[in-house]
Structure formats: C-alpha cells, structure tokens
Length: 328
Image 1 (cartoon, one colour):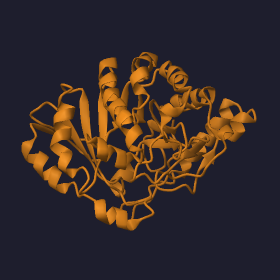
Image 2 (cartoon, helix red, strand yellow):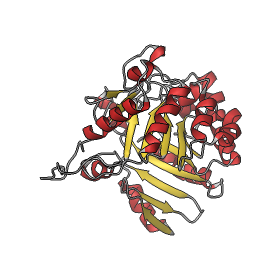
Image 3 (cartoon, helix red, strand yellow):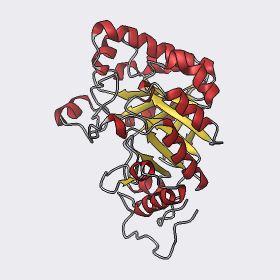
C-alpha cells in the first residue's frame, strides 16, 4: 500500500494493551493513553482478522507492543493466529517477566524476534528505574535476565536489548552492558536509547537525567569493525570486536523519519493511528467490526487511514501529489 506521499506501508505496530497496563512503572515512561474499559481491547480473533486484511495490501511486518503485551493471558493464542498468516516478520517488545516460561512456545507459534527492556545490571538501580519494591524487583530483575537467555535458547533471532541511558543512573554501565550482550555470541543486539522529553510531565526530570549519545556514537565510529546505516531511521549499527552489534536510538522526529515511515499503528481499542506524533486522526474499525461490518467495509476504513497519513515533519516546500491514488 502506497500513500499519497509515495511512502510504501509494509509494517504495523499493534498495541495489545493500553500503555498504563504494565507490571512495571518505569520512571521515564509517560504511559500515554486514556483508560479504556476492558471490553474495548481487541480479542485474538479480531486481531487476526485485521492483520489478514492488512496483509492483502502488502502489510506483512507486525510488531506487538503494549503496555506490556505479555500480561495478556491469551498472548500465545494471538501469536499462533498471526504466526500462520505467512508474515515476513512477527516481533514483540516486552519487559520479559513472563518470557522465561513462554519463549519456546511463542517461537513455535511463530514469533520471530523480540525486544526486551533491561536498563541496568544493578539490582538496586533496577528497582528504582522500574518503580518496583526492593523485594519484588530482585525477583523480576532475575526473571528479565533469565528471559534474555530463554529467548536466545528458544531461537528468537535477533534478541534486542533495550537500554534507556540516563545520566548519573546507568551511563557508567555501558561497558558492562556491552560485555553482557556480547556473552550471547552475536545473538543479542544492544540498543542504547536516548531519553526523550516528549510525554514527560516533569521537565526537570529530563534536564537532570538526559544523556546525549553523541559521545558514544563518536566512540563506536572509532572502535567498530563494521558500520551499517538502517534506511528507515538513519540509525547506525556498529559491529564491535567482541562480535556484538550496537544500535544508537535517537528521538524519532524530523523530515527524514516522517518521509520514510513505513508503518501504520493500531491502538489496543481497535483504531488505526496514521501518525506516530498525533492522535487527532484516529480511525475506528473495531466498532464497525463488532457491528457486523464485512471485510470490504473494514478495507475502506484502512484505505481512509492511509489517506490521512501525512508527515508530521515535512521537508521545506514539500507537497503531496494530488494525482496519485492510494495504490495496493
């Protein structure tokens, strides 16, 4: 599916739970979204149905997110349903606390890769970052570390380790993180993520903990055996001598990101979200679906959402081609 800005839409990010539904309370998480009644969360059949419809239009890459997607008791059924559709990519982002017991089952069901959040290797810091009590955080810290091992052993490939770098908190752990990720013999990619201000209610928090990743980029430019640049985000990945790939993740904004964005997003309550940066043009498909709308009617809503896709940040003097139709 190509939108009127010439962007090929191949991916979809599906929130399986609202942002507030997570067993962690990470200090940097803005938990955006409105509290919704449980009835408005898509069930496995509805998720499969909408992905089937999008697949007909060339959307064959699916990322499952939350909140925490693995809090859903039906997560295995969801993955099984999507795993049989012939997708080129089926991935999930998780804090990993339920992954130890489910990694092999999820891989067998069709999950291909996973992002796991682990922002520190220090148990006390882990407690502070995740907002968990000292007693519970040690158990969950160990579970998260074990989850990374379980994911690798299950054959999920790659396993990406998400680390939000914060000044004075975990910026002194970069080398430890590199060694830890490197211990998995190339199966783990380390993603070092820059703290973003957007969504934080306390600006002083950002000012206190923001850590500019430019110095790390300069360091890895010198140390890397190989450097590649991902086309979508212009992110660089660095292959270090210990056979670990590191990716620097800066805030997703600016004309390049918007003009190359190949994803549409779906909220947990069944609405297309054409633009990452705004909620002003959501298109509800779940309500019509539950009222008996057929696939053709849902397809029209998808096409409507594609027509609403507009770069939040545009290159100067850039305009869409009005003569271009939405193409399958």
